Image (cartoon, rainbow, N blue to C red; front, side, top):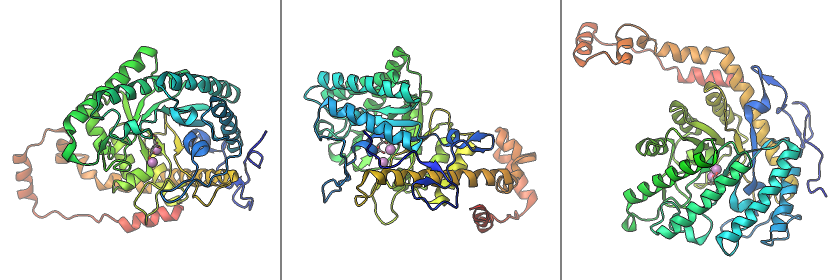
Length: 434
Ligand code: XLS
Ligand code: NI
Ligand code: NI
């Protein structure tokens, strides 16, 4: 039984008018010695592809899911796996990500939920072996159930904390069972609504203890993939502790976790934090902690996490410039944490959505690579800082200069002549390649 009314999506080149074809993403084409698929490492998000009914705060779901009987049964969960792999196969997407409760139902008690999870995981393992598809990362849903309304690892209630720990323990185990390359923490409820009822310090201490236990457990079962923290400033909580790259890095350093964690940066989360995505990516990359990317985009006119598919080539170019500069992904990739609009309710719309995202990133990759090869941009930046390459600049960088020495120099040199930053020239340079 097939549910997506199309064959395998093929690369047809930029002159193709076929909406169900790639115009730019040519998986085996080499860009700078590496295939596009190895550069981009696209992943499908189980929660959006299989479980997102496309509801909004004012209306119920519109998505047609003819394969889904809407029950909480394990059979239904297992049946979805085949549909998901049909989707991945037709898209040529070789990685995926999930939450425990996307792939398998939350039942009446933890033991039953975990037993159901094992059954679905066995099916996923079978499909992975059959297709070669890999799990980019797994995670636990610690935000949907009412028990987590006041947080999971930052809940004021230790029994909720324990429940969350049990869920994460199991989720790490199944991620390991599926040879997952990483494990993500996104702290949807790890924050607060009001400080009036919140002991922020204790909550952060608890969160760090939780993550140390996760690291220890991973070690004990032989899971060596990195953990990721996915920053987001707010929504669903009013203030989330993992608000942006800088806040996450500070938390990880303060609590001695930086050896085990990297960041998973989501475009729309960065913009909700008041940054550009390239800002948050660069902050992470500077700390050697850029692990993976949740590829999506927001709407400039709406202030929430609209999780739209990325189509803006300027943005994908900026993202790929950072990724190429750090030498590419190792364990991470580009996970489409993105959903169709509520109006796009047919299964085939999933294809259109992902084709657009994949083509936009293919173009971003090609443009970023061309800019890198051209070298003018990098050279400009290098020259801009060249006064730090020798003499007093080099001493400053080496940490051997003193204020007294700098004062002498300033007195002797007189007023500095500053060179132009040439922002417009560099913007023109990017457009030259787009
Ligand atoms: C929600 C987050 C979530 C994480 C995984 O805004 O992006 O989907 O990626 O829990
Ligand atoms: Ni995400
Ligand atoms: Ni999000």
